[in-house]
Amino acid sequence: DAGVIQSPRHEVTEMGQEVTLRCKPISGHNSLFWYRQTMMRGLELLIYFNNNVPIDDSGMPEDRFSAKMPNASFSTLKIQPSEPRDSAVYFCASRPTGGTTGELFFGEGSRLTVL
Amino acid sequence: TQLLEQSPQFLSIQEGENLTVYCNSSSVFSSLQWYRQEPGEGPVLLVTVVTGGEVKKLKRLTFQFGDARKDSSLHITAAQPGDTGLYLCAGVTTDSWGKLQFGAGTQVVVTP
Image 1 (tube, rainbow over the protein chains, first blue to last red):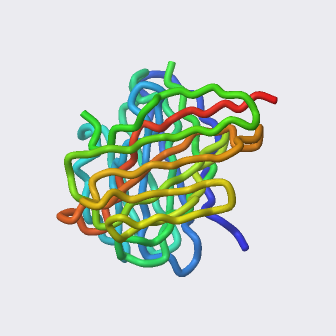
Image 2 (cartoon, each protein chain N blue to C red):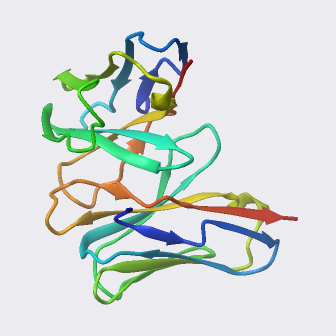
């Protein structure tokens, strides 16, 4: 069975450029999470969706970050304009239910480097 | 400040030794999970605990949820090199429906 699929796996861009990260959750999962991982701050929750609706975006750093989930099988995280401090590994994860105890299934991450 | 504080940050031990990783908070959790992450991969779930005082065992790993549901521990008996990885605790507080937040993690290295 296909797991959570993220693209691109690696992205190197220059400061000021737009970056779009993509995620395909596991079919049938109705919750989707975006996390950012750095050595300094660990895994930070950016935003999560339930049934394609954003439930909590309080972790989104600033207006340069935006996330969408137009349907149950696709989500994007966009950074515009990108800055060097945005360099991190961005993970997407999905969960079968909207409850509090379900397992999160993570993608392999998108490693972003902003020069 | 982190919602979940993990200690220690780093642990290096010899094969066959025991180790314990701690996860603490001032918040009450409706559920708490432990994940393990290896380089270049996403975290993978090890266990979920939901009841205060609960103890779960997974082969050589023992997980405990505090009575007040504010803390948890992971104990590994007779560690093996395959136990090497980043161990992360994650929880959902009672006032945040479905929002899973992670601690900073404990990097465990087990040398032969």
